[in-house]
Image 1 (cartoon, rainbow, N blue to C red):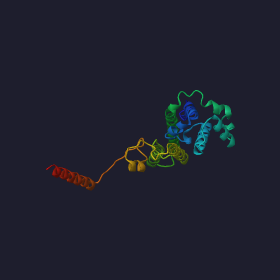
Image 2: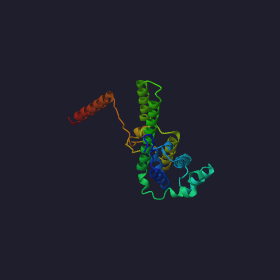
Image 3: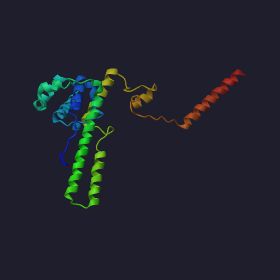
Image 4: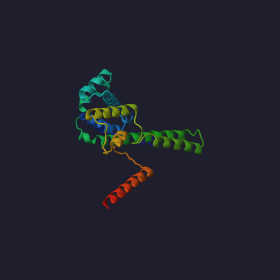
Length: 232
């Protein structure tokens, strides 16, 4: 293989599995959105299908082969992704829809490797051009690598479509349950109203003022004196 040959990282099976898992159970879209964005999909058709899934989710429309096909057809993108037969086949062969997040992580890892390849090629091109001195080239290479490391992580801010999809799901949950708590209730009403309950992956610190503690201590000691005087 030539030294300058480029091998583009991708995992089409994992991409199909992500899409198929969401089609099989559209509630898995939330799990997937924690990991990937449309830009992480290597195949254009898969990227377009995922974008359409997000659009359906924003409209609170169920995601299944019928709704997905109709929306792609309406947008003039159905034939470009492979037609109705390909859309219907996406859910075939998915081992378990509950593994959607694992499939998404594989897609994300491949996307990161692609970005690393692109960064390496850019640095190589700069070195071959030799338009700057060595130190300048090293500084520019460091900037490229730093930009790559800052590009995306699991804790990064999601795009507008992802945030909207999550918001709609949360609103639907609150309407269905008719409760103000979306997480685990703590038992303290005011606290639950402020936090919507204890949420996964969050750390909540509760602080109390010492003055309040002293007041409690005084009232407790006062009550003790009253009880003691009553027993004399």
